[in-house]
Image (cartoon, rainbow over all chains, first blue to last red; front, side, top):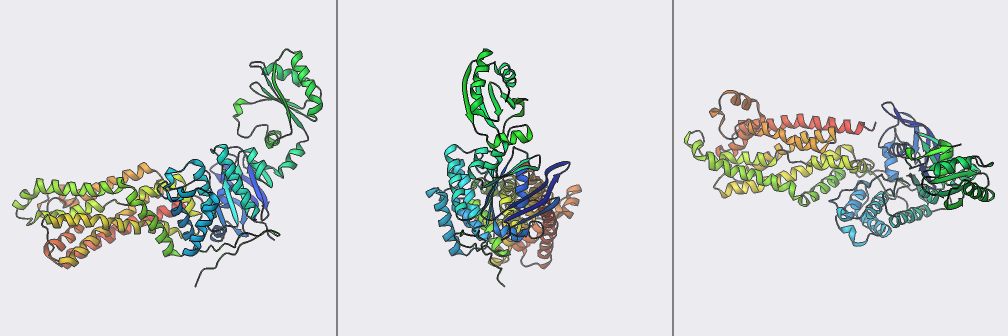
Amino acid sequence: MTDAIVVEGLERTFGNTRAVDGVNLNVPPGEIYGFLGPNGAGKSTMLKVLCTLITPTGGTARVAGYDVVREPKEVRLRIGAALQEASLDPNQTGTELLVLQGRLYGLSNAEIDERVKAVSAMIDIGDALDHRIKTYSGGMRRRLDLGAALVHRPMILFLDEPTTGLDPASRARVWEEVRRLHEDGMTIFLTTQYLEEADSLADRVGIIDHGKIIAEGKPSDLKQALGSDVIVAVVSPGTGEQASAELERIAGVERVERHGDELTIVTPNASTMLSAVAVALEGCGVVVQNLTMRTPTLDDVFLELTGAHIGRDEADEETTE
Amino acid sequence: MSAPTVTGSTMPGRTQTAPTSAKPAGFWRDCGAIAGRALRAVPREPEFMIPALAIPVFFYFVNIGALEKTAEATGRVSDFRAFQLPVAIIFAVTGISRASALVLDIRDGYFDRLLMTPIRRLALLLGLMVADFVTVVLLAIPVLGLGLALGVSFETGFLGMVVFVLMGAAWGLAFTGFPYAIALKTGNPAAVNMSFILFFPFAMLTTAFLPQEALTGWLSTIADYNPVTYLLNGMRALVLQGWETKPILQALAAIVGIAIVSMTLALLALRGRLRQGA
């Protein structure tokens, strides 16, 4: 069976800026592919190319077996998309939006009725579906946006940062719906800047930075490949720099990153190093407020590859090796 | 020939709930869907309709109150209320369009949502224009009713009234190309609001208040070249003269001329907007 999405050497430039720079990726049918990266990494541009909204300046992309440049109409029939910031008409009702989507995809009136019922049950916004969208909360808007993308039963669903700006409860509901669609066999291409989202939902993750994919694989494999554990120490205010310098001197510490008074210590074996860290900090007179050990996250993977965190202000960071 | 239906693709060992039945809806169904959405929005935006109706009614009363006796005293205008009725219609329908909604769709991403569907691209514009035509007819009817209530009668009878309204509506539709062109070209709501400025030279530098023979100097020259002059002549002929072929044909030619210019600009702007992604 051919892959749902096949991208080869894809490029997209805007003036002198290379938003997407030679991306290759394959997404088999039924997979949730998480496209993870910081703001401005090229995620949304990539997604817009795959949704036929913009054409690439180089390379090729096939979606559902069709070329996005030469056969965009065939692609559009087979995809659904919820773009960043739910793009909804505040004066429409939810039902009107869903019906309009159904009409534009050539569904019969009976099919539209059936699909609106099915989608409204799935997104679970109750009677509000017949109210104007301007009365909806952010979470309801996102769920309606997702529902609108599903009216015509697409083969491939594109979600551009589907939970950005949502509260934790609304985020959990969107995740639940995405998982349900995955169980039904839908291919889902998801961009996100939330590590937890990619970790929780995606079968595979592609990490993008400055328009290039810098790592790809199952989240667990990417984290294992890092081969290191992490100790996080929170020290008393104003002592972070001193503590960082002290910790660097410990044998077995690979790297220390400081974010204010929070120190992240990367080491091959955190369990054996934990006491050494505590002793070293106590020895230099630094008061430890919190000391925890954890396995690496996708953020650590990103940090290892790029030297920066996803979604954190670079000015806030200071890494010493 | 019916369009092919897309059959669902499934992953081995998994079943999609049902195959998708998406297919291109067809041009006219696309237009109908877009027009339907636009028309449903009209009563939900009273700020859109109320000025469009209030301004011509206000000016109709003011012009009659200020100029009726003076104009009729010149001997060049026999019935100033009838003479002013086409002006009120033109005031009501000129510049009425969904361009302000379109530009918000572009800004807020709804336009992208539509572009991701298999909709025919021309239907994005034509559907809105269908809604505009219905809207301007609905605006013209109460203005006509007001004229009738104030004693205006049509030399061409009921059929003349129908042609009169359709002529005004056709003008309104022809003019919509300008705000749509600005909306599609700029994607800027402020620029679309400024397109209302175009209304003034078209509607004012003409025979809106006095017949052409009474105009002098530069205004007379400009009015000679203003298509609205010929539109007003044709509409006035329907009210005051009867089925006079020449002014009616000149009015239709003025509408077609403006439509060609404005629609060409709108279509070029649509093509440019679609190519922005290219």
